[in-house]
Image (cartoon, rainbow, N blue to C red; front, side, top):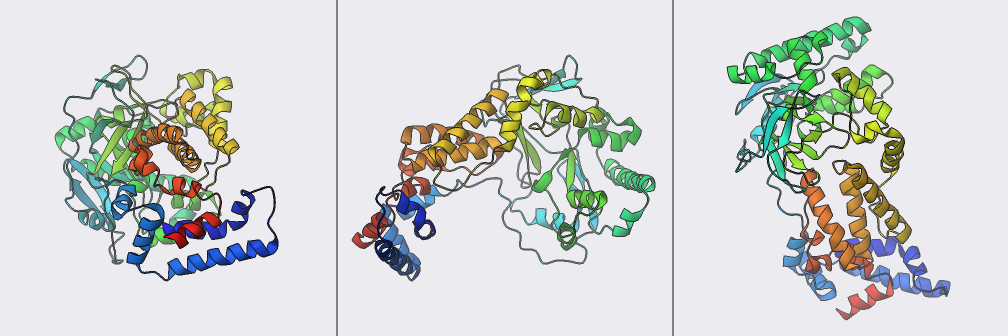
Length: 465
């Protein structure tokens, strides 16, 4: 932490010097102070870790226990690091069973999963049934809350019926991309059908019946591929190949649509679920979903408070795009969304555009005007029911840091509590400093805020310790 503050002080010397006084120091005075600051930085750089630790205690009152407390809470879903030496059969696909889940994965992912301590870890069991699957008015079956949920609460945790590759094999031959369009599509569909058939025939009878009972909005693609395409959730970076071939494809230039498609899909997977695939779409979803490798399951967590009896919604499309774009993306699934945003796009679209175009800042200091703009964005997100979007927890992080830097304890803790819950829902790291006043005052943004009188304050503090 000391290194971070000292390096920031040096890099931002010109900025901090403008915060002192409207009276500008002479060039010689600035040079003298910068020389002193450089001396401090060099002194810290030459210290042993133990000496740095002691200096931190003397300068900031930050103890070893504080450092541990300022670190993120241990994540029970952390799969750990995977040190992998490339193997010749990394890209060869193989059938794997995890509990009742049937999967077609590469040998690379098989080794990755086997490397996770205790794999597969138990799926979280809900004490009482947290949801029910019931008919809806216009959307077939849906998932409904059987009790009240607070933001961040676990709604469901379920292993998939099947996991299948979304893209071509990771040993994909680029020559395939040169096959004329119509024949290439037929080739791709046949490959997908073959993959899905090989998975389906290994599933239990109960799982097969659950799969067949799901909606098929793509009858033209056949029973298996159509059902998988309709109900599959992309597992994104939470379950993805990282073989040498995948890395190679990521370096290719996207000079045509086929290459871009291969780059975006190769090494990725999707899962079909018995209950989670029943969750319907809304452009203002009330849950976030995340796949966890250690349990090999997908969790739904409340993105905002949910009342008992309320329908559970996820999103099938990019919910910050204009209503017309969202409708176009939903059309192949036979979905005509009737959420509030789609019924009144003239009101909703400008709000969503403002949220989409907002760029969260992670660097301090955050000027008061920028901080206020971030607060306004948060209000728009909450007004539109977009708490399930990534921009929500990222903007909360900005605002928390800004108030901590300003040493505004009340507002920092208020937004810190929201940030804690938003990160819990999103599966992001949880820091006790978000909601603990004592740790807040030892956090990097709070301590950085004490050094607006850079570098004199820092130098005097260093010399006095």
